[in-house]
Image (tube, rainbow, N blue to C red; front, side, top):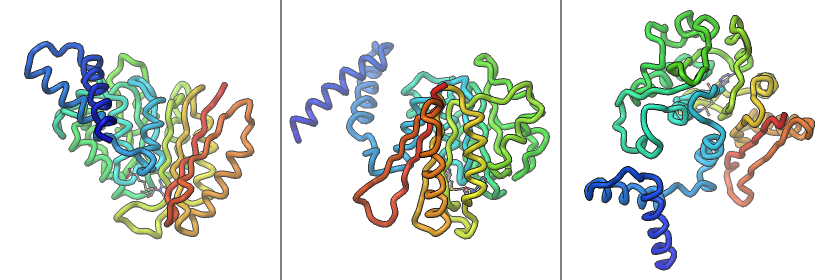
Length: 284
Ligand code: SAM
């Protein structure tokens, strides 16, 4: 174990040099080393935390300037992570050091949907608190996909040069295409994320449902760009979730293998119905 830790520390020190080549001063050097060592040794054990695992995979598909969609924003944690993936005002690695609330800028477009006004407000509040308020239009009434916040009316520019915009809409994901009406063309998303089920801390009776989820997933495939990723975290510990998962797996199995590549990640030996991940990427 000790040997492993020493080896990991050496790799960390090396990666500190590689990741932070602009560190020339002694304090900077120590800070950089500390940060690299911490990141390397304290990283989350990904397969033990399915939601983190899903986001880790998504991160590999998202770059600043992209269009990304959170189809179930809930309390906003996934939306915030997507915003961080689009962030452009700091070098990679600096994000961890930024204080919550420091103004941050994204490049690209981030859309987030939920049917519950309190989820929409919680997501907006979290984004503002974490410094992403500039990307959110002002004056948008809480819980409304209103004019100021409606991508169809603000042009939906996803050019890399344009400052990024974030739209948090109180709208069922099965209606997300309606959000893009009026744009010259449909956005091409590099990642679309679904985290199914009910709002943690909210009403457990309000869950995603099989029919609307399937509709939204079909629409999502239309929005996905080549090599883009659709990532669905599924929970079969409640009756609707079990049916939803069954239907999604059936749908995904039937997708044309020439056009789509599908992967399914299951925590095989865990109790209490752990979440599972369904991944779909467009091949052409
Ligand atoms: N991504 C969230 C987060 O980071 O906190 C967690 C999402 S929570 C597990 C599932 C969410 O899906 C709930 O907030 C629920 O209101 C929402 N939901 C249910 N049906 C929906 C629908 N048709 N369209 C969009 N969101 C829906």
